[in-house]
Amino acid sequence: MTKLKAFSSLYQVRLASALPPTRSRRFASRRCRGSKRSDLSDYTRESCSSSLGSLIGLLATSCKKIAWEVDQAPLALATTTGSGSGSGTGTSVRNASGDEQKELDLVANALIMEALASHPSCALAASEEEDTAVELNTEYASPSSSEAAGETFSVVFDPLDGSRNIECNIPTGTIFGIYPSEGSGGVMRRGTDLVAAGYVLYSSSCLLVLTVGKGTHGFTLDRSTGDFVLTHPNMEIPSRGQIYSVNDARYFDWPKGLQSYIDCIRKGEGQNPKQYSARYVCSLVADVHRTLLYGGVAMNPRSHLRLLYEANPMAFIVEQAGGKGTDGKRPLRSIEPEKLHQKLPVFLGSGEDIDELLSYEDVQQISSKTYNM
Image (cartoon, rainbow, N blue to C red; front, side, top):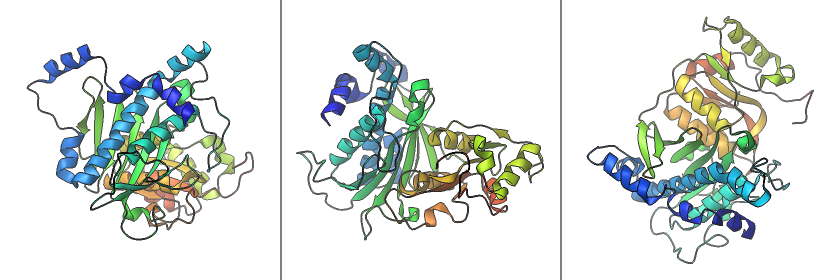
């Protein structure tokens, strides 16, 4: 934690507010005066309980800080090493899922954990970067934390999805899901129990996409004021798209059913007579966000994505926008988790595209001929 705090301390003032200098804030205040717009706090105040709304707000604030860290990482590295290359690296440690942890994975994880520990309604958190779920009133508790009165929540999250892309400035993101703490099982629960889920896309703009079970809505960060402004209300995924997103360099490792499906839609011989295009970022947040806007299907047919931290929250978001999520056999949110870091195939997208995909039946990649899974 000492190393992480040292890394973050370079931007302590900016992290406190995630806003540009005061002069810019005064200008923004004048520019926005008299205009009426809805922001994240307005939405949560009308759509969920105050405790859930404040927890979502805290996560959003953490993501503003992560956005700043992602943006500044090459400069920080250049300051300490004289080179801006290799940003996000600096560790050979692997997490409980077996993935290499980048420096910013750890920074993002610490920022979210520390924020959640300050919220009295957050009792438990599980992160892709932690070996076990964390009881927040013990290891990560702040001195000011107190026992929550009333409803409490458990949070699951992937602090920095797509971190391997940081060095080449390709979009990354944060994914989170929120469960009520009532009942047994902690975070080891089906996705149908989620009360909220969201992702934040760090790209040309910083966008928070959120559902609390009342549709899916997008909020863009106004960097001049620090507000997440409602820019994409009531997002609806097209019933069918014309884009598929998958690493089809692995085509020859796929089962026959998946190969046949991809062959048909590429040729325009599927249920949609138009030929599909391939678009693949290798960042789940980026690929799902594009699919949410334009339709189609985003997939990883091998057991690579995590049920708790990635699949369930993303499925909730996509379903609330009118789409579907499956592991190739079962709806994702119906699956009872067996392990904290359980991995599985994931297919997310337009309802008609997912139905067509499933009609080929054999779409899960079980074995690998050319690379280690």
